[in-house]
Image (cartoon, rainbow, N blue to C red):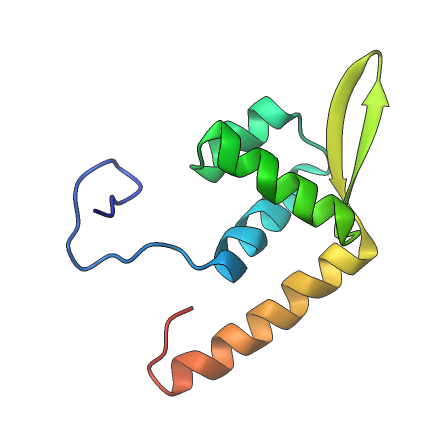
Length: 102
């Protein structure tokens, strides 16, 4: 079942695609400049295990990088990650012309 942002069940709403989840995580980092794993967990609406897998994937593909400030871990978006968002938004707009939601 899918739930809307306010937590109510919505039969029309679909689960997010992997590409959408990646874009959502990257957009959080773009807006916030840096974020702790806890902050990303609360903003991304993912389970801890799923978020860890996505963060590892994004870091391995150099879309994000991990930094440490005062012994605290943060993630930041890279230029490659910013490019992903730009291209994703272009593709999303193109898809919507044909009635396809990604």
